Image (cartoon, rainbow, N blue to C red):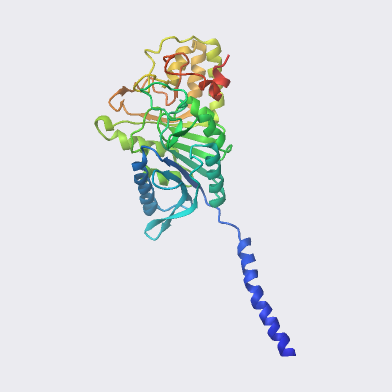
Length: 379
């Protein structure tokens, strides 16, 4: 009888040990990364051939430099594969791709629902002390595809998922407040005051271009270590992108890039509001630096335009405010051998000028949805 009880006790212990083990494993805290970088890559469009190249650059950079206790995830959709959340991990002397999730294709990547879903999944999958994001796709800054009607304008808000695009106010609504310490936009025309101001409560630092970008995009090989450094070196990221193109020749020597401190945009908006209320009204755009090659121009230099409006007492305050906000800016002398960049007029931010575009090609109603219009321009 005693032996039977002993054997029964052993059997019960054997059965309970796996349960205890599982309970212990589930209670172990998840490792928190130093930083998680999300690349939101919408390549289900004419950029489909470029996504593989950029992912290869990311992998080459991680192979050579590691991840510095950080994690890098790509939300990746193209013309041949379903949307998926892929992590690039270091493996031996190379890298591997780990697919964490595949998404339903019925929900477009350029919707608030999908972006919120992805960001939530990234926070759950790769918790970190800090987060950064790269927005990768076509873009047209503030200019909604519902706004431009010119046959010369190919305008896509942010992103293009098989024809569906994401207006800037929707993009801002999709990103939780203060969730990313930096956002780099590897997309055209995104360094506008309207875009940066719309995103000012979503990120501390914002990077982008006032013009079209070359199709190769930013320098991923050299920029990934800067993004994943103990303190992200965002100025160096911008310098790397600029130098990638500045050392080239002809139309390939084409780049504008800016780094914006979004915490300084409220002060900039305050002086700009005063200028719009009490300054000089501009009725001719002939001498204002343009950043788009064809009509409707849509993107003018923000600094030059604002100073033309400002009276003498406002200029000094504006100069200080924009110098505080634009941490770094660089531009090649020409964009695609077409647009000449005057360094004296290049402020690192673009703006739209209400009433300057042809009324038949631009419906300005969408512009009046934006925070910059409502907080600064609206009388």
